[in-house]
Image: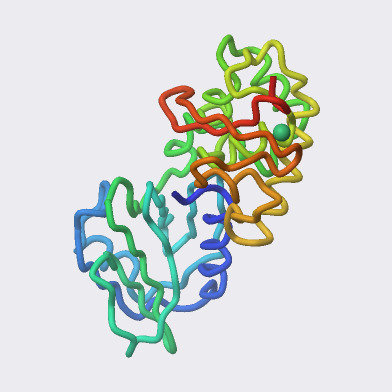
Length: 251
Ligand SMILES: [Zn+2]
């Protein structure tokens, strides 16, 4: 599932096409268009120059003409570049073509998709600050005021934007915090520091790396052990999501 580091990787792909003119818009499956039809998308995007892209949480956008093209990758989406002669994949849904290359939005499950919006602030009105850029003070204030378990709070995009299931587990493991602990009982300043470190390392990789020194690298093993202390990891559901933690490091 694309999380903040993956979307940051897609932003870098999109940035490679900034200030370049969109030659064509090919909608292969209009089922990924949100609030815009294939005709209007083509009319407003083709022939226009793509602006510098931005990312906020799991949202990615770039100005094009008088509007902003906004991508969300849901559970299975990705944005990649391809040579125009390269065969298209059956889950490629929208293709933007440029002189010398194509950008392809691929998404198997089509839970989210592409928007063309005039008011980005309105689109993101209910979205919290970006997890990579939120200050420690704001993080502590936002999480500190919530009477909930810490993991669901971290994953709530209206509280904090960008963390998904893998990252939330990874950050909590690094901070030695049990995912069910109430926010009020957590050292939030320390958690913020661990989150920043984890995000910076993951962003450099373009994904949450499944290294064996990370919890993420052990979570899919049936009897995976904690990379830090060797204890067999616990599995359970927290906030409705499959969760992995170390019963010794995260009491
Ligand atoms: Zn451990």
